Length: 461
Figure 1: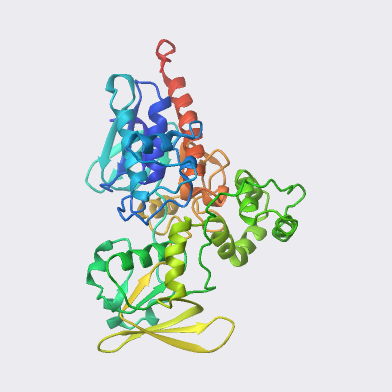
Figure 2: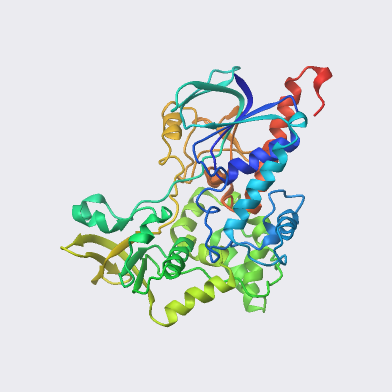
């Protein structure tokens, strides 16, 4: 069968695209969603049931529909949850919201496009100009589509050290993927933990450990030793800062600092950037973007991607009582003896190497930067010239309409990418408020193409 649209992926970007396509496609259209994640759309982030695993964005900004900002808040209230617009809902509740929103769009079968969820991985892709795109599936068989959206997201980053610096026996102490939560059941109450990475994933894992009864010491190691800031209990209003004429990183930073020095709340200043972040990124040269990634990214992350106030309070209490310590340094080696692992790291700003003795090493370095390395499909498509990695290795090359570019920089007809894969073009494209706008735009563009392909008498949704 040849579908009108194929969505490749099963995470948030894929479910948001599916929901939006169901709203705008004619009822005669067909959609295939290709992915092997049984928790379609919820993924790891929204499948958790731990109450302190909270969204990092207030509920009022988490609707999947950009033109209906209260949709998520209204859903929460319909479930009997007393919430305000500025509350930080649980990620588990958000996963249920996504599931219910999709289900509500699937119920009126006679008035919507046909949707088939294909439980498989696409492992290869072929394309001939003027003909549908063909995917080969790992479960066997093939699938064709006239329009394609790649919504694969990114994979988990590996340990920040080469394999030859890791003792073979040390692997039994290493948790490569902490979101496979089974590792928590193997941790002893007084075991010592060393976590690589000091961002949002680290905080989630620390609080999960404490909730499971762990009482041992936790040492956190990252290159700069920075942890996310909290949102204020009462949200500061976004502050509009005049950045006209600011077309380099240093000048932008100076302008923002001046606004804070003149009395503006820094959180409001950062939030005021949100409507302009993509345009600011696109106004930078390649060298300026590269400089930002080298020197400014860690600072951007802790100020821009903040955490719920009560989550920060719970984490900060562990730092204050000495349970958690955060160190800045560079991982040098992982060795082991008969019982424990030994983590060698160079203290930041020095040549001194210190050692952490630990029972467990947990990789919380976050998501990988490049969006191709984790996916055999994307690597195969890159190798055969169907797609290209963007210049900074953040994902794949797309234009400002999210159309996939070939290695020569030309847009591929009826071929789109969504979400984190498009960070090279949009930068801020991993959070719900940004992805939902992109998803709606892609859905409407595809719907226009599908209607144009229909006989004139049938162009009614």
